[in-house]
Length: 78
Length: 354
Image 1 (cartoon, chains in turn purple, orange):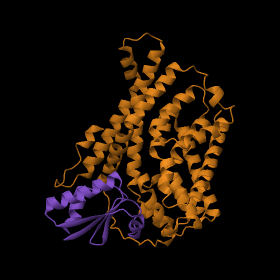
Image 2 (spheres, rainbow over the protein chains, first blue to last red):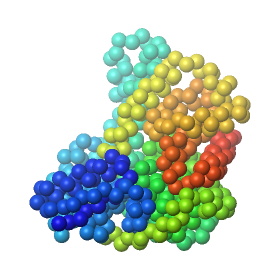
Image 3 (cartoon, rainbow over the protein chains, first blue to last red):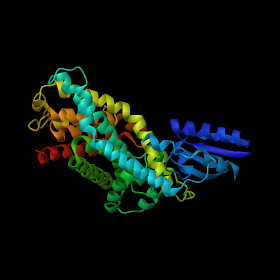
């Protein structure tokens, strides 16, 4: 089970990012637990400056702007 | 530039050919220049096919609209594409690393400059602010960045270039940077760190080690195309509406109507324009075509630009977002310092562009 956190205060891109993560995980058949982190202090604690960010199993893999679907697939499958 | 979108590779397709992409981009640029050079004859022809009375006000207004709409959209597309490519060389994380621990003065200049080229969206303003301050970027330097980033943006520059010429666009760039540098420096000198919201001061941000993806030229061209799709897709309707309003003003408002209330001799019009701009929230896209039309009717350039800067840089919604990290007193200082800077720009512009 991969632990995925989507970091973002709740803008449209953050929601789209969350949907992308879920969709890619389902497509690849990877079991995931997706959690949204909206608290600014918590987001800053991960050291990212731009949102949305993606954290997989405690590791920041993306920060700022919509990720590409193929990249999301790559992060989920490694 | 719809020819380029069909080239976007689908997941699983073979890696894109950089030569093909570069050639396609060059061809698209060449096509752009050919189309642009033909705008005047084509728009004249289109207007001549309409059942309009020659020399009437309606014809004047429609001619303005038919010529300006494609011209502005084309120039904007070009500028946004170029900025999208440039921005692929920068990231907020890298900018923060460049600014952390920087002295004031040099830091303010660097922050304002980086504010133009670093990808930034206003919904990221708060995480960015916290991220900068907690990583050791001085408060005043952070403000220089936060003022420059929205104010001197590619849409404003592209539209000013398209409608008022490169001299005005460059002057706007210079004055916008000056306001960001000086306002940030002043805020830094005032030592207002204690006026941050308490929880912000306590945050020790982790330092993230993002994997730096090596971008190919194809990635950078794609970044430019994405920027065009994203930004032009979002603002084109505003621009068309703005040009329509501008066309109406152009055709129907008497030429000297505005010179009395918005002209160079009415000194009070500059502060009035700044005050009026604060509660208004619009992007540069909707407002600049109106600005052009107002100038054509005798409004002074400095007054109109001060209004524009105020609308963009001192917006109420952004202050509400920043309220989460700044105390009301700090927001008041921010508005005061930036407002004074914009005021100075308005008066200087009016003095320089007679």
